[in-house]
Image 1: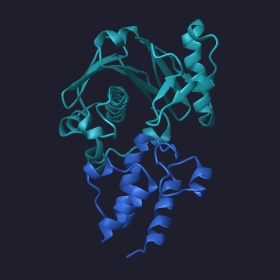
Image 2: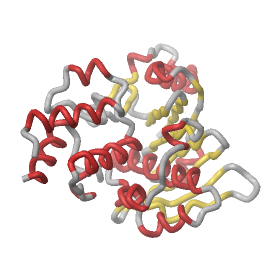
Image 3: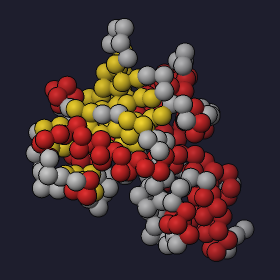
Image 4: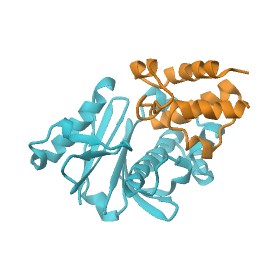
Amino acid sequence: MIFIGNDIVHLKHPANSGVNPSERYLSKSYTQAEQQSIMTSIKIIPELWKFWSCKEAAFKTLQKMGVVSFYEPKNIEVVSSNREVGSPNFFGIVTYENHIIYTHSYIQDDFILTLGCNCKDGLASSIWSIESCSDYDESRRVRESLLNILGTTVSNYSIEDIKKNEQNIPFLGGLSSIDISLSHDYGLVSAAYLHR
Amino acid sequence: MSNPTQIQERVLKILESYTRKDDVLAKAMPETSILIDLKVNSARFVDLVLDVEDEFEIEIKDSETNLINTIGELIELIEKKLG
């Protein structure tokens, strides 16, 4: 079964832009190799969040695969994330034990959006959105955004039909042929879906 | 040294900085999930753990961090560390 997971990071929000990449902070979430890559980067903070975003997107995918239940950022390792020449797109590989998640990160000055998938082809066929909204309206707006990109596929659906299971994983009630993922961060929301 | 009530108060004080769900925090129970119920951003969870370490002068290992889901589990871990 193919699964996707997405993650968005608002780079301009003070909580993210002001993070202190101390050795102690980095050692909580990043492997030695990741720390090295982050600290030798020209842009340390965006690099830190790019790695984080890849880990989060991978975790959501792994969670759906049923191979991980707790978020263990240090055990979910970004082994590569390379820029497509002249574009804001980074394509990467994230590993957890013997599982591989492929990632596509879209990076702009103010945000990083990453989509993860356990199948390389799934990345290309996934549809995603990004919108901004009030900090306090993210939950509703991200659901509306999902319904917008799904369009007529779910014309009779409302945001109440986008449910979450006991692991907090979102799903479309009655439509198991579509995998969905939702993410929000300080007023930025992103929805993604994949027809299985 | 803190008693369990003092530990809980200090933990809730730290959580105030990380949640926007003040109503949920006000009625927090041991089984209240930090990430799901209080909607603490997972990226902020690292900062929260660092704050807890500083506040109680303890070290929380990665393997222990991964097992903290609820306020009760966090308090229990702190109590264990403080002996």
